[in-house]
Image 1 (spheres, rainbow over the protein chains, first blue to last red):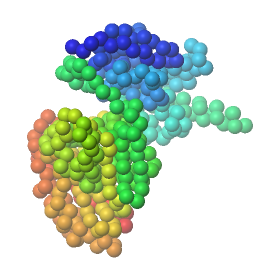
Image 2 (image 1 turned 90 degrees about the vertical axis):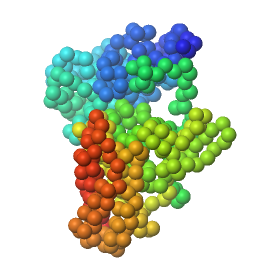
Image 3 (image 1 turned 120 degrees about the vertical axis):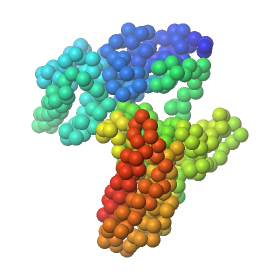
Image 4 (image 1 turned 180 degrees about the vertical axis):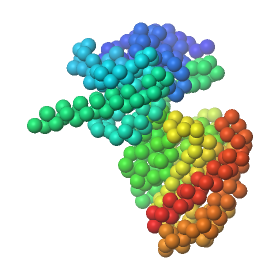
Length: 168
Length: 252
C-alpha cells in the first residue's frame, strides 16, 4: 500500500485540500466522496457512459478516468460550477433541457449538459450528425435521445439568436 | 485507470507525464511528421496533422467518445499494444518509427519491431515512448473500421491503406485480425504492380480490387473471441480492404 498523499486541487474556482488520499483515487471519487460534489455521477467507472464528465483545463473528460493526484495545477469545472453569469441561474443548455423535457431519471443529465456546453463552445450551430457524434459518449437509458437532440437544437438556435441580436 | 477503478491493479506510485510539454510537441515538415507521445486523439484531428496524415486522423476520430479522445494519447495507444488499437494499423502502414527513452539513453524502434504480441512490446521496464515519427508520404490514405456500432466501440476489424504516389507503393495495415497489427505484403506487391499509377481511377477494376482484397484476407490471422469470430473477421477484412482501395483510387 502506498503512503497516504495530500495535495491541493482547484475546482470551480476554489482551492480544496485533499488529505491522506490513496494515489489510485479517481478525480470522480475525490469530487464525490472527499469534496461532496455529487453532480458528476458514478456509473460505469470505465469511461463508457459519460455521466461523470467534467472539464479539466477546459477539456471535457471522464473524471473516472483521471487520476486525481495528477490534477494539482489544473482548473477543474464540474456541473456545480456551470452557472449563467456566476450566480445560481440555469445556463441556456440547462434551461433548454427543461423546456424540451430532455430529463427523465436525470442520472445522465449532468454529464450531457457538460458535453453540450463543450460542443456549443466549439461549434455554435452544429449539424445533427455533429451533435450525435458529440453525444456518443453520454449514455441515456430513459429518453431515447429524441428530446435531448431537441434540447441541443434549442440551445444552439438560442445562441445563434443572441449572436444575431448582439450583432445589430 | 479502469484496472485501478476495478481493483485489478493497486499502484504504489505513479509518474504523471501529461505536464511534460516536450511529449506534446508535433511537427510537420519535409522530413516527415513527428508526433509527441502525449498528443491526444483530438489533437490528431487538428487540420495540420489531419492534412499530413489523414488516415491517422480518421483512426483517431473512431476512438471512444470526445471525452476519451481528449484524454487518450497516441503514445498510450502504442504502449498498450492492443491488437485492436485504432492508430496501430495506420502507423504500421506508414512505416512509423517510435522514439524511446530509457535510463541508458534513447533509441528508435521501427513500429513493426515494437509489438511482440497482444499487449506486449519490446520496451524495457525503464523505457517510455517519447514520440512517433512518420516518413513523408504524398497520396491518398484510408482508415476503415467495423464494430458493433459506430461510436464508442473497440474494432472488430480495421484496415489502414496508404498510397505513396511518388514512390508508387501501396502499404496496408490490418487491425484486430492477428496478435499484433499486421502488414499484408503480398497484397501490397499485387496492388503496386496492378494499379495504373498514371490513371488510378480507371485501373480500379474487379481484377485489382478483388485480387487485392483476397490477398489481404489471406494475410489475416484472426481468432474467435468474445467480440467476433475468425470467419467474420476474415470476411470483413476482405470487404474493408476492397472498399479502402476503391476509395483511394477514386481520388485519382
